Every structure is written in structure tokens, then in C-alpha cells.
Amino acid sequence: MSGVTTAVITEVGVDYITATSHQRDSASPFRSFAKWLVSQEVQAGCKDSDWRASGYRGRHAGSVAFGVSQQGSIVRASSECAREHWQQLLCLADNVTRLDLQVTVRPVAGSTATLSRHHKELLKAPRSRGKPAGFKMWYGPSGPEAATVGKRISDRYGRIYDKWLESQLEEYLGCLRYELELHRHVALATAQHLDSQEFDQDAILHQVSTFFRGRGLRIGFDCQVPRDMTDGERLNHSRSLIRSSGRSIPEVTSALRWIHNSVAPSVRRLIESGHREQVLRALGLAEVPATLAGASSSTWSNFAKER
Image 1 (tube, rainbow, N blue to C red):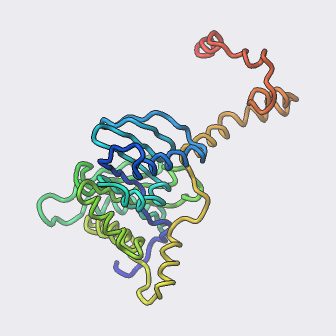
Image 2: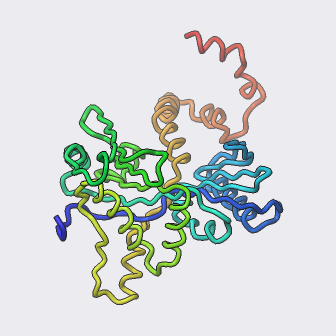
Image 3: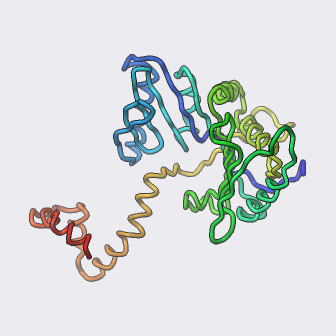
């Protein structure tokens, strides 16, 4: 199937990174940058909350978590934040213990049909040494929705899933995401290798495609950058693989979806019934009289639970 394109690449990049530093100084560059990342997520509309994990304590907002312990500091970044700032974290950190690479495509055959084909390919995957790679499939009402390849505890672990089902964002309708999760020394070595490349998108495509092709999958994409491009053209091509639309923050998107599905219908009904001013007051968009502000009580909440 070499040379045959069966999927259009829409995104390529780093999707997750865990970076650590042994520096204990509260004003160290690593900690300062981590705090800045959290503040940026808060400024974008995400909730700032306490965070604890693996002996670390700190703050979490949106797609960034930052913590400190006796051993030093840790940052976990995902999604757009990881894509935009993984190189800065690598430069400031002492180690990278996890790195996720992703390639998002729009298969010509569609996500469901492509995942179904992958299932058959995994069942027929030829043996190389020892046992064939382990895998799991997840099926929904309309067919396969996701697959994992390998073991989570290994240095390399793969995921394939319908990105629209996972995100519910229109921009991902018909898209399939291939993710390669790297751990320990492999994560650090790969991050350093990507950082040394002038066109890291090419290197990410190669890493992801090599992993899944090695498991017997016909993924329909590879490093699709024409070799006869000039350096300027290659740079523009690599940049085009990074989504240029406005940033979608999962936490904000989820909150907006809840407002649209659960709040908007009631608001619309009340406004149409002539209660516009009361609605604005209840939403905190106008002066709230003391009587209205105190109308909600634990007694009413307990009653509502019994209804």
C-alpha cells in the first residue's frame, strides 16, 4: 500500500508531556514557567483547583497540572498546551518521563470502516518475535470506536480512536486519531530527537507511522512532505499540519455544551414568557436583590433531590 494515500492529514504534533525538574528553588525557571502555564489556562476560562499526584502537590487548570515535592517539580501538559510548549518544558526540565505524539487524519473510507479494517489487520498480524502485539477494541452502537495496541506499562503504547466521538467538536467530524505514548528513556530520547529536527512534524509522522505499520496496520499516511520542496516550502507545509482554527479548550467546551443543553432551553422558555429581567438577575447579569440572592437554601436543595 506504499505510495497510496487513503487519509488526509489534518493535525500532527505532541499531545501530552510529563516533565520533571530536581530544582527546589521556588523561583527556578522551570517552576516559573509552570506557574505561567497554569495562569494562562485560568485566563482562558479554566477553573483553578488543587492538584495532587504521585507525591506532588500543586495547582491544576485546563490542560496543565503543576506540583512540587521534596524531589523537585513536575508539569503535566496535554492538548494544545503540550503542542505549543513542549520544547520550552524540555529545555527547562531535567527529565521527560512521558511523551505522546499524535497524527489526526480524515480517512477516505470513514472512521468506523477504517477501525473495522484495523481490527481485521490486528487479528491477522504476522508474528515477528514471540507473541503478536496485544490489542483491545472498543465497539459502540454503530461499530468500532477505538483500539489500543500494546501494553500501557511498556515503553511504547498505541491508541486509535474516533476523535469526534471523544471531543464532540465539529472540526473533528470524520476524523481518526493515531496516538503513540512513549515512556521513560524512550520519551526523553524522542523529545530530544524531535527538538533537534528543523521539521519536527516530519519526525512525528515517521515515529507514529512506523509504530502502527510495525503492528501490521495499513494506516494510509506516512511522511507525506514532498522531498523536492525548498526549505521555506517545507516549513510552511509543516506549519499547515498544525490546526489554525481557534483553540478549543476541553473544560470550556464542556461547560459551554452544558449551558447549551441544560440551561439554554429553560432560559429561552422563561424569556419567551416575559421573565427576561428575572432571568438576567438569576444569572448574575444584573443587580441581584437580596431576596432573590437568598432564595436558594439547603432545604430547597434537599427537597429538589427527592423530587
